[in-house]
Length: 337
Image 1 (cartoon, rainbow, N blue to C red):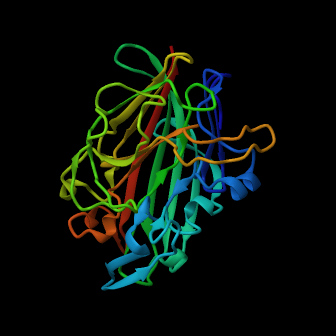
Image 2 (tube, rainbow, N blue to C red; image 1 turned 135 degrees about the horizontal axis):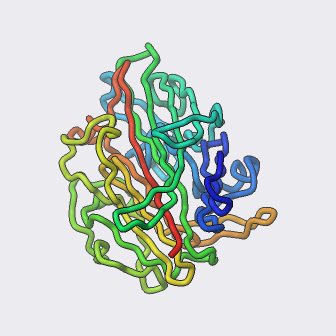
């Protein structure tokens, strides 16, 4: 994809429509691997992957009451399905990249056809992913590098009447280039979250996050607890449209690192996001890429509510009927002081 400046560049792979590199002021701020073969062998943490056909976890690996029946989805984590199953969209080869102009910026397009029965999901859908980038000044005049990610899923099959959809990106960010994210200052825009059981499945209620005051600046260091929770921006599930792209992206979280002077803001039209401080990262060194261990990166995964397809009050945000379109948009903004 064309670069606006020599110190700004992006690299994407057809495998998983992966964000392999996001370089700002000469520094790559995402964790990655050298090539498709390495991602196939070592990417258990989902570095940079496009996640689907649903995000996060599905309780007991089952979709309940879709087309009047239940569907068994392939299991990935304990009793639950995780990130679309054993071979979700993160491990599929997309068509592309195709150069495009999107919303006034140069970018690339990836497409993937997910057929009826893949990983147990009903219905054939087509996923379209657009990455576009440019420079944009904020209200104070500060110029920021912006990477926009837009998702569109269309139910094109005639095998059944409805299916479920959720898509996000699973990039891990590291603003310092150091072995860990220690020293990163974070602020989340909400303290509302989904309490879960021991397997990561929500209990069906929304509460205030207790372990830490996340809406005030906090430092990710050895004293900071590990975080892996779904935070909620929109607490009224009935207000969330199937296609959220008509909404203005909201700031989900912001980060900065005192030593590198790098900043990151994550905005999205989505109603929730998983924030994960990388406790279980374990990737060996591959070629010139260093080994990555616990807390070598953090994730902000914009999404619908976890296990939404199986919660009657939440399922409308992800239940896609034949001929309908699901959509979402995320913006990553970064700059160096």
